[in-house]
Length: 254
Length: 205
Image 1 (cartoon, each protein chain N blue to C red):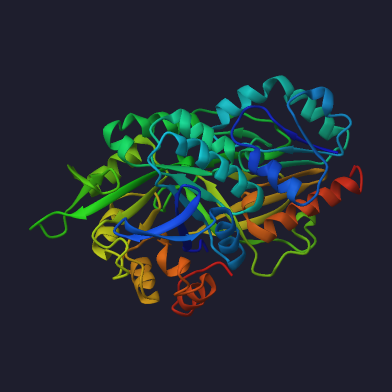
Image 2: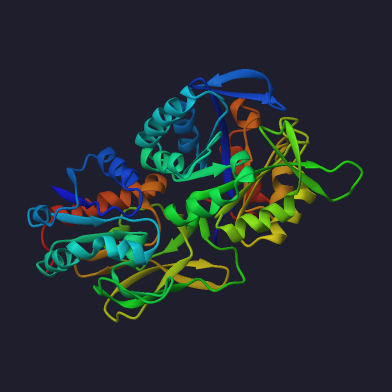
C-alpha cells in the first residue's frame, strides 16, 4: 500500500536553515545538508528545501547546496523558492534535485508549468500554492504570491485544477493563515484541493500536535504532510511522528 | 567497471551519486565503444518514452548486443520501461524488446502519478532483493507501468489502490526496477550493491 509521506521542510537563507512564525522572526536552525541527512537517517520520506534568499546570488548558493545534499541524501527531495524559468528548473534537476516547486512565477506565467512539465516530465513539477482564507466567505481561499505578502483574485482550488491540466505533478499547499502558528493545518482547504485534483497534495502550514498531522491526512485527504518547526526544534522526532500515525492506522513506511 | 549510460534523457546525477556512495567503480558514458569492457550496464532515465527512445536509438543496437553477450543490464524507472517491447505513452513507441510486455497507463480513478514509498513483494531468491529489510519500501514516481508478458521472468510486485504492478524484474542477465533505488534509502542502496555483486560475479549466461 502506498504510504503517507512525512516531509520536513528546510527554509534556506544564506546557507542556513531558518524558520519563522508567518515568515517573520527568523531563527537559526542549522546546516541544510547536515539537517537533510539527519532527517533522512531518522526516516523522513522526502525533503523540501525552500530558498528564501531573494537575491541573484542565492541561485548559485542553492545549486551548491542541492549538489551537496544529493551526494549524501538518498531520498527524494524538492527544491523551490524564487524559481522563474524552466532553465532554472533544468539546472536544479541536473544538480541533483528530484522535483522543483514553482509559485509566484507560475501565477504570473502559468505557461511555466506547461513548459517545465513538457521538458522534464510532470513528476518534476510541483506547484506551490500559498492560500489564504477569503475575508467573509466561508470555504473559499485565494492565492497569495511573493511569500504570501500579496493577495491575488485567483481561487486556490481553481488554480490547483488548472495547474494539474497544465502538467503539474503535485501540489504543495500551504495555508498562510496557519503557517508557523503550530495551531493545526487548514483541513477544509486541504480537503477542498485534494478532492478537486487527481495529483498528490502535500499539506503544509500549521503543523503542531501529532493529532494535527493525523487529521489532515485523514479528513484533509492529503497524500503527505510537510512540517518544519516541530522537527527543527525537536518537539517531535520523525520516528515519534511515524509511530503515532502508524498506531492510528495511517500507512507509514517503517 | 560499470557503465551508467548517459543518453540525454533525464537526470542521471542521483544514480551516479548513489553508485559512488556504495563504492562502485563506475563510468558515465553514452559511447557504445565503452560498453564491451563494462562488467555491467545501467540504463537510467526520467521523462517520456518517445523522446528517450529517440535519444537511445544510436546506441540501442550496442546495448542489445552487449546483453546478448551476457553483460548484466539494470534499467531504472524509465530505463526499466524501455526494456519492454513497446510503450503506449503518447502513441505506440517501440522499445528495446529485451523483455516481453507493454508499458501502459495506470488506469484512472486513483491518484496519478503513483508517487511515494510503497511496499514491494518479491519472490524468494530474487537476486536484486537479497538482504533487504522485511518491511522494504521503495520510492516510486510513475504514471505508466509494465504489463509483463514474459513467461520466464521473475517479477516483484507493488499494490496500488487495487492495481498490482511490476516493481522489479529479472530475466537471465536483464534486471530492472520501476522504483528509484537511488532514492530509496538504505534498502535502495542495498539493491544497487546486489547489482554490483551480480556484475562482479561475472556473466550470467
